[in-house]
Length: 301
Ligand code: GRG
Image 1: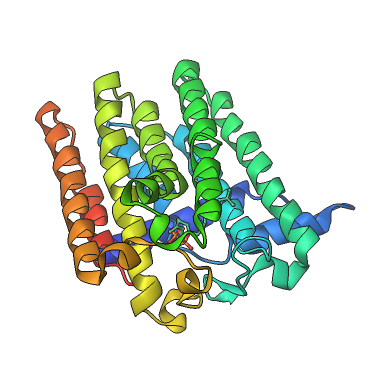
Image 2: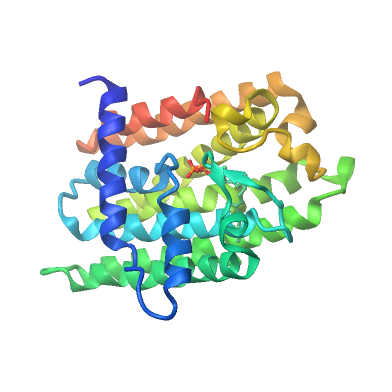
């Protein structure tokens, strides 16, 4: 099967999985559940759950115990997008080709839907502990990674630094920008791959390598995001381009120019693949995962 057909099949399988873990829309709090489901089921590449399950398989994992974590990370990712789109943050009207959650449900309900998704992510991840024969040590380690990488030492920390860096212009250094990208974007990609490794039975040294590779993937992914914000179109991206300029954001593109940013993106992606394929001496290998990382270099959305 070609990489693209395999990718489509795996994406569709993740979509099905997500629907089984989302809340039923019922009762007096039904609206928040509708807003949560609207946001999660609006499409998206499903990259984080895919990286998680492929890393899990690479380490020999083959059980359904990974599924609650796959659903949980997509819920956390979606909450971050819902909150990021709010008027108090980026104030965006479109995401994933659809109206953003606050445009459809109002601002108060979008805040609650984001909060709901963050909390429900942990309710969902906890279901991994209930699987027959669950390895509770692995589950609790995976849960700790999820909490930490999404929190103030991870994504929320990165978003904080990002918001405060707006309007700083030339005062934003490369080091400052790397802190933002590492925490805002790479942390959740690290969580995805590290949880896959932990649940698949990787040892500490292997988890460390996965964390480093995911750092490179995360920064490369963000650089490509910055490039697409300048070079793509609303139709392709599903959201307006020029958002960084609108918010006076310093990005890799404004700091280094498109060509240097693109070269750095390719170099970091290749380095990540080297690290992942370097694990292969122990029989650990997943060609689809390498191809997936490679595909991010040329992604157009
Ligand atoms: C509100 C705590 C909080 C955090 C927000 C995710 C985020 C942090 C901000 C969104 C803006 C942004 C550029 C984030 C960097 C990560 C990123 C590129 C997100 C988009 O991820 P994709 O491309 O989205 O995987 P899809 O829609 O495909 O799931």
